Amino acid sequence: MTEIIRTRLLSKNYGLTEVVSNVNMKLGRGEIYGFLGPNGAGKSTLMKMLLNLVKPSGGEIELFGERLLPGSIEPLKRIGHMIETPVFYEKLTAEQNLDLHCEYMGHYDPKAIREALERVQLIGIEKKPVKQFSLGMRQRLGIARAICTKPELLILDEPINGLDPSGIQEMRQLFRSLRDEYGMTLLISSHLIAEIEQVADTIGVIDRGRLIKEVSMESIRNSKTEYVEIVTSNVKLAAYVLEDKLGAKNFKLIGDRLIRIYDTALTPEQLSKGLIINDVPVESINRRHHSLEEYFFEITRGGESHASSY
Ligand code: ADP
Image (cartoon, rainbow, N blue to C red):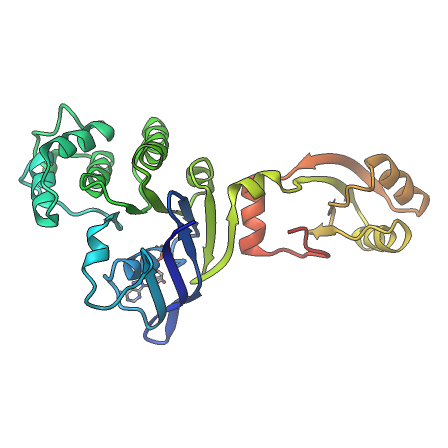
């Protein structure tokens, strides 16, 4: 797959604080990549470095196979973006804002502007001044501005902020159609898993400036997410029996009453029998599924892990 973005040991310091730390990421053509991380994780800063809006403190960036240098202009013409809250000419209409942007970018095409407004469902209000727009409408206009030049790469920072549930659904469809119809590559950030898990092909989990996991959604969906959960008043004894008597290799203690066992070789029946004959007080034993939310929570927060299941 052709690489559209590649970073090597990309870092950014503000004063003594490293807000982006040695990030190695890659994004192939036609991929939808979701940056997932809490507020303050470094997502916007990373995106700004990709757009030459912020100067890296270390490392390098390649866009479309070429090294990005402080004076690079050409790669930026091939990128549409919306970073943080989009800023507009408030007294001009939505359409005039897009006209101006396209002229400035050297891609003036009234048909493409109309198409972009249609795609984000702003047709009918395109002649209204932006100062009358709600947060959600501004967000849509920001996306229209990012796509009206038909860029090869689209970088959107929290694009779903301020949208209602139906707007979120429309945006997901829009992102997929931009990839499927125009072959665009998309980099999208969010602090909410639910917002991007349904749209991203690959998720990069970023926490305190570090890219801690880059994983395809397909492999997450196919990964083992089943486990057996035991509630007991004696987790220490249970852990000992699980490991030494029953041969469990992959289990996790959660707090002081819960154990999750990921070994598929052991059925709940075998587990409950094995624990009871070894005098472990078992209050309940159930087969459960991991939600994607739990998966990401564990990646970012760790947890008291006996053996990693990932
Ligand atoms: P995210 O987009 O994931 O919410 P940001 O990239 O906006 O995170 O911010 C990462 C960290 O960098 C935060 O702690 C933020 O306060 C800090 N930061 C961002 N921009 C600046 C700046 N211009 N000067 C100093 N610190 C900054």
